[in-house]
Image (cartoon, rainbow, N blue to C red):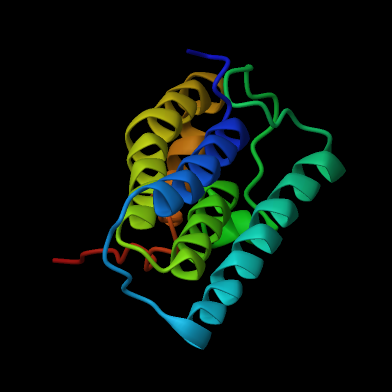
Length: 158
């Protein structure tokens, strides 16, 4: 199952979303020109995923999910989300689902979210803890998995 890298899963889900929308007579939830709104999360998601990938390339670190991590990146997009590429893929799929306009297309982003949140990310995070220990734990305590920085811990004085 290690051959199913996240970009491959995204492509498979896109194909499945389009095929299911065409093949299954389901209720359309977004119609007409409103479908163009899907371009916003599509473009934002693609930009986010590519930006994260380019940052990894610039610092010279491994990007493949199942390879050992070799550098902790906590700058740029990684200062506001621990997973900008997964967030980007999720936004891309949400945009495509909106553009397709059917209920069945919404299953693609849901499937990706579950796979990323329950399989890919926990796998990667366990490897990051093993490789970087307290440095990664500090990073994990300061930046949310999906989006946002955690408020600084306040010292309690008696």
